[in-house]
Amino acid sequence: MAHYTNKDTPLKNRLLKILAVENLETQRNFIKTITHELEIDSLSCAAALIYLTQQLEAPTSKDKNVDGQLPTKNKSFTIKMVRYRLNVGSDHSITTEQLKKALIEESGVDKNNINNINIQRTYTLIELPDEMPPDIFQHLKSVEINQQKLDIKRVKTRNNKKRGNNPLRRGRKRDVNTELRSPDKMTGNTKKLNDK
Image 1 (tube, rainbow, N blue to C red):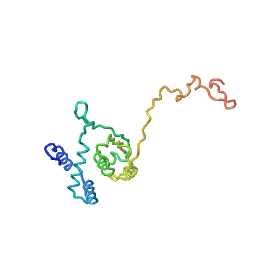
Image 2: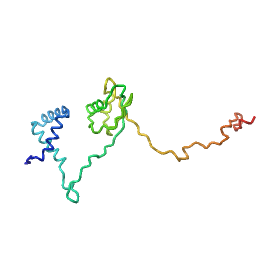
Image 3: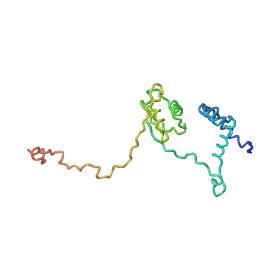
Image 4: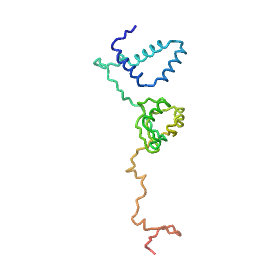
């Protein structure tokens, strides 16, 4: 049996912050559903969830480095992001906060995974995590903000190939006199325009 002491203060602080800041209606509904389906009380469910959280966060002996110290966690692990174009912009009185709120509520994306919001007059460019489920993508097409549909579209990435020294991509080198020549319609030969 675990004893809870002052080392649990960070957990308490995190819980208080979450309760003060976040809208937990979805999570509350999930708890109601799961407690009903599993025929357990809310307290047992909460205890099991805390246990799971601690297991996920608990360092294991294999996580320790040579000195026996725990490595610092690299919180900046990379998630592949994809650029999208939304059919709303500053002309539609859209704000970054409205956009984030709508995306979080409608798609369930984590607010920390909404990046590089670039609001233009008639559209917005935004980066979201790759592999968005097709049903969520379709749903976001019809979501409205300020009576304007998002009509989300994936932006194709450009190939940033350098085209500088590829002789196959360049046209023929022009002859200085080429511009002064025209084809003779009868023979197909070129003649100088100056020649009469």
